[in-house]
Image 1 (spheres, rainbow, N blue to C red):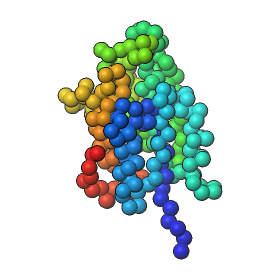
Image 2: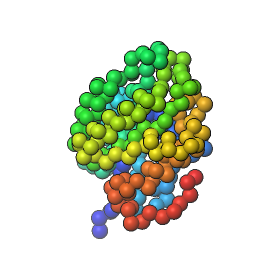
Image 3: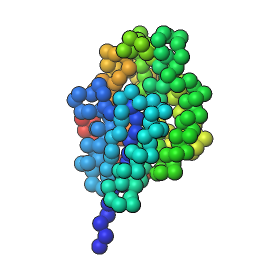
Image 4: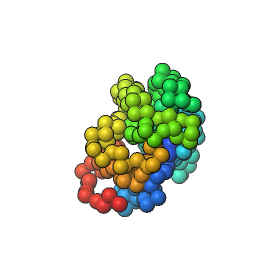
Length: 225
């Protein structure tokens, strides 16, 4: 009898995926990893979030990171989840400075990233989280603005629609809750523990992810940590 191996999901992104700002439970991705570990038959999750990553740095490590996570010879992960773009929205040096990656370059680069990712495994994309412009600048040099985050998330969604890649909008659903500022760290950029819990709840119940994971018929109410 052959051994039935669980699916592997590689999650690529920035400090949001890494879990920065959530000392309690390690971030939304870590919460999902723990939830799946306690769920029979659920996928294995690899958190490959790197603080400060933007689109270009993530694209450079996509293939090497994914291909070495197969666990067994000649295997590769069965899914890729991408959450990137927030760092690219930042303006450098002043509120009207250049973006770290301009919108046209971001859109073109993300289109290329999706093509590369889909050649490796089925791919899903999570949108961007809010920022508090009143708390800027971040690290005394970067200005994150809600208007720019909204524009870049729109570019993510457009590219996903073109490529027929599942996309989970995140910005507007979070902003629709009057508590959204309470979900941010004092730096105005990173989610705090409450914020990560909110993102986790949305990702964990995302139909496209549940379908990929083979868990759509087994969704059970669980602790939100």
